[in-house]
Image 1 (cartoon, rainbow, N blue to C red):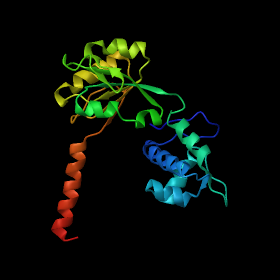
Image 2: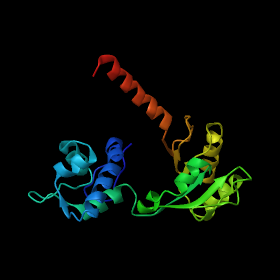
Image 3: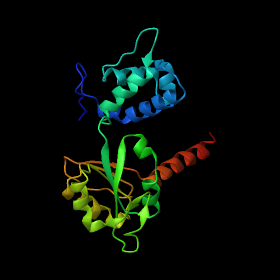
Image 4: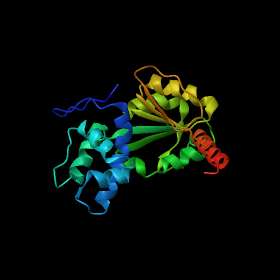
Amino acid sequence: MGVRSSGAGVRAVPPATVARLPGYLRALGALGDEGIVTTSSDELAERAGVSSAQLRKDLSFLGSYGRRGVGYEVAHLSEQVGVVLGLATQRRVVIVGIGNLGHALANYSGFAERGFAVVGLLDADPAVVGTTVAGLVVEPADELARVVEQRDVSIGVIAAPAHAAQRVCDALVDAGVSGILTFAPRALRVPDHVDVRAVDVASELQILAFHDARRSATGA
């Protein structure tokens, strides 16, 4: 299912296009930081790592076609992409599992820069509960439902061990969270109305190892 924007004349955005939009937004942010006001489809596509034809097709779903001889206005296009991605409204996030990874995520400045506010840290370990990480006091995992309700949380991040991931996922769903980002190396079961994105670093490394082995075998 695609994402539909409320903008006039904007079509439903296909999932494959949605997956590329953060890359466009990142490239636009870099252009803005460099003081660049307008950009061509070729320049933006190169920075985002796609073809210019793909870029133009993707942006057409946003109703943005650029201006002939001028290109795209960086600030305006950034705003358009942000609206389609749902970043016009700040999203509140909780992180469950405050080990090494949880610490790193809690301290990641990119959340705030991209419109996300980490409003709660939770862990099941009594030795961790009560400690302060990134200015937040770690709370007991069994208080998850209260934290989600009182702080209007819509996204949960799972940084817990694999054996606890499904239990944490179920608790997030029961609490009313509609989006989950998991770093646990296992598949999670969720109802249809909940979106899950998985980041499995080990699997990605294994895929890179496969391609490296293939190149070595062929002498490429």
